[in-house]
Image 1 (cartoon, rainbow, N blue to C red):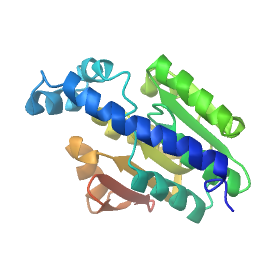
Image 2: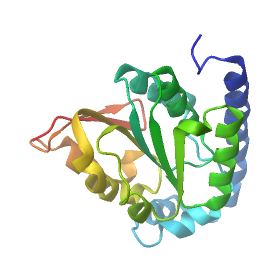
Image 3: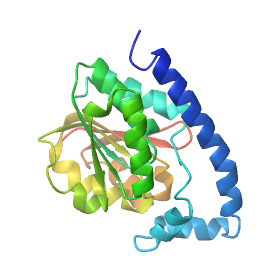
Image 4: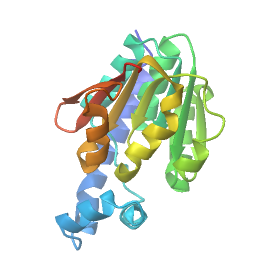
Amino acid sequence: MTTLTSTSLVSLLDRLFEEDETSSVAMDSLAADVSKEERVRLMQSKTEYLDFYTRLKDAPLAVSRETASLLYMLARSCRAKSIVEFGTSIGISTLHLAAALQDNGGGRLITSEFEPGKLARAKANLTAAGLVNLVEFREGDAMKILSVNRPESIDLLLLDGAKSLYLDILALLEDHFKPGTLIIADNADYCPEYLERVRSVGSGYMSIPFAEDVELSMWLGK
């Protein structure tokens, strides 16, 4: 049995995924007064995205079950010891990554979230799962809080926060990548410049779209 398949964690994750599904329906109604075009514009803006995410501050906005399982598998397969997560929300992806770290024998997961209510819930969920000791929670502007006390090297990076900042976060942390570092970007199609960067020949990355909404990249080095 792995940490991920333990009875207590399975029960917790089932509850959180169910909550996410329920909240998604409610949040769709809440955002109904904003057109699809306007939502995309807000999500892609580097200055106005906070308005959109503030409206959805009570929504988990979690990764899918399939993406969550993929995160665990990737972290295990690369034997990750050092992970950075941009966008904690209520901690569903964090739980999967921390479970992988525990099953890898330990490590450190730095996770960032600008919404304090969500970060508090994530801490509670990681505590309930017995995985909180593997996680360093950072609250605030990711460009600031991830620019200090960075790990010497990063084995895996998850991008699942404000989409317009994906390229900036990538550039901020790239000096800490090593050949084989994995980068998973959820809903990366909302950041075309990010996709252009990781898919460009000679960029130092190998990158492919995975499923419908994930971009999976590997740092090859230059």
